[in-house]
Image (tube, rainbow, N blue to C red; front, side):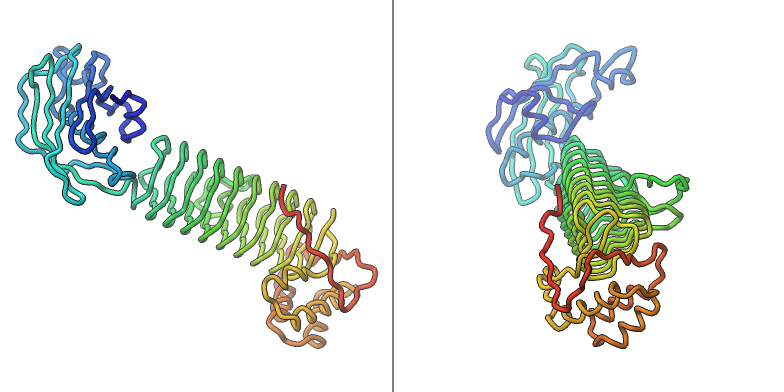
Length: 424
């Protein structure tokens, strides 16, 4: 015997379309008998018919079929599937079903072949058959595109879910959302609208994505959030729509975004970036590949943070941080280059040596950025890392390049330790 709670755990049907109250008998894969109490409170009696209420014959068939669904979904080989009507044959209605009747619904499986099956079902009141027939059914992947959707989740009809997507309890997926294959979304997460998420992402519970930006200039114009593949987004992180018609908030691939991190409108996050817990970015921030932002750090709007830069925990960053630099403090000051990070990413010792020389050129002399770029081009070897650094400095900057440094004497062989504490 299965009570209503066990039935709810087994089949996806809910009020007002759940039409069985209890499973009285159950023989795995072969037979089941269920009970349905028909009351005047059934919503269909309001229109069928108000002066002479009769349970619609199609709903009697549906009640019989739901018993078959319970029987099927308790079979191990059909786990995480949905059961769909494939055909109805030889159905006959013998007597009307009225308020106050107690329907006894019985199904017997006739055969199962691959993704198809057939059963014989009947409904009785007081041991008299009121309806009977043969029902064919098919098995399909649960949800859209093979997704697994928790029964308490809400998914907008316009959403597109890839194969193997898992939607947890009480998740809300709004309009114009696309989620790629094998992405997992934890309980209570809200993906409000206009968001494209790639494949194999792991989004933990209570994350908020695609809500309007915290920008007084935003007037409801169309914008998007674009998230790539294989990102980890931890609990309570927030990622907002862009401000401005057609603009985007963009997050690349393989990033690790920790708890309560905030990525606001129009930000661009590269690949393999680590953003620590409770870190707050401002709008239009750009963070390049493999950068690390420590926990509780704050970053001013329009700031750019270069590739493989490392920002210490609780730092306040108000100007651009060039690639490969290690900064810390309030306001943030350059402490050296991110030597450990460079070594971990396989940067050659030759390139690391040239990057150390660039540190002296950028921060030992107080020069305009244009003069610094000229010196870098003249005095350093044109390695890929140096060309990348020069390209970063040459780009337009709304905030300027941070020139704050707390090193009294910059040595050629300067090596500083890693900052291990990234999150809270």
